[in-house]
Image (cartoon, rainbow, N blue to C red; front, side):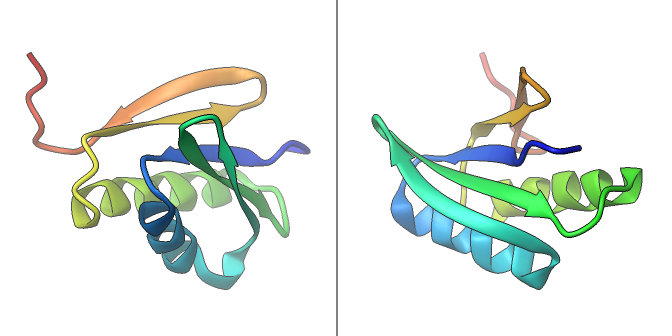
Length: 89
């Protein structure tokens, strides 16, 4: 994994919360792109476990920050992760 994993946040505060929860395990950049904030996380080493850890942390962040869903960009693809327990109509 050479590219960073990018996670969208609805506000600067939510982006800062996510960055804080990712801690020292990733090199992080926070930027604003149009009307969303983006946390770009680049792991210090590349393993499948690093990706799993990041996705678990994003899922916890969705609940803690009360964010309904986020887009995650990884290896040229875009994925949507919804907050657990959220029933979207």
